[in-house]
Structures are given as C-alpha cells and as structure tokens.
Image (cartoon, rainbow, N blue to C red; front, side):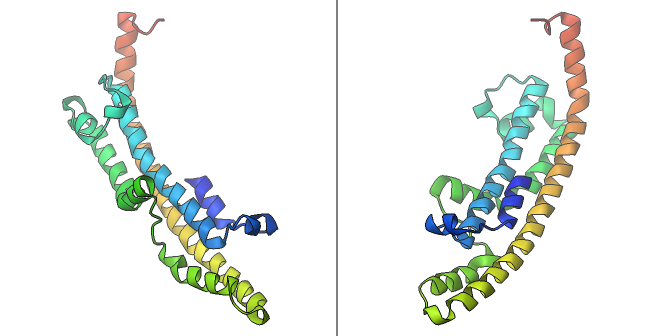
Length: 189
C-alpha cells in the first residue's frame, strides 16, 4: 500500500511516458486501483493466516467470513474482533475494488475527475495556449495527488493498526498451538 501511494504521488515525467499514452490521470488511476486491490487483499490474507494459526484445516480458497471468522474456535476469541476491525478498515472501498477487479471498471476519483477532462482538452487544444494549460494542469495534478496521498496514508495507518491488533490477538493462539505440537512431537519433520 505504501508503494502504491509513493508511485501515485510521483507523477511520471518524460517523453517515454507520453509516447506510451501514460497521462497523469491514467497514472493516478492505475496506482490508486492497485492500492485498493492490495488493501482488500490484507483481509483475505488475514483470514488465511487465522485459518493456519488455529489449524482449522480449510483450503485457502475456502477461507471467508463464515468459515473462518464465524468458526466456533475463532468466534469466541479476540481474533474475531481484530478481524472485524480489519474488515472495516479495508472494506471501505470493497465495491470499487470488486468493480475494478471483476469488471475492469476504474473507480471515480473525485480529486482528478475534472482534471481528466481538462487534460483531454489540452491534448487536442490549440497550440498557442498548450504550454500554459499543461503547466497549470500539471500543478493541479500535483495538488490532487497530495490530497489522494493523505487519504491513502490514512487508510494505510488504519490497516497497519488493525493488523497489529490481529497479530496481538493471534499470538496466544499461536503459542498454544506451538506448545501442543511440540509436546506431541508433531512439529518435527
């Protein structure tokens, strides 16, 4: 998530990008969408980690809320609360992520929505005003990615805090499982 934020906030420069048709709005959308995919994947990974820690025996593809979080062994522990917190922290943009991943629909990013139109107009506009429009447009994109970056950082911080709570909740379970496996000799290869 941090890398997606870094790339998004460092807009492409140079002729190589423009030759490939990589405009500021495409750059921002691409990295923002990666941020969404990664953020939501944190929850999926947490369910798999919980399955493994509790030794529930589920296949990774079968790890979901009903099979992991609502499992009798998990439901009565602080791990469920931690998973709920992570679900809330990462699920804010679940619909946008799903539309992007499953349908290829780019979410609307309000901070750049109007700029996309201006950018398109400037690429096909009169040459006499082109440089001035492009400079102003570039400055507007820099300001917009600053705002988006603050939002992304906030989401990253929230996800990090909830993941830390999950690890704290999983640690005693992991310790119990490790102790059990060690005592039964099942941890040896």
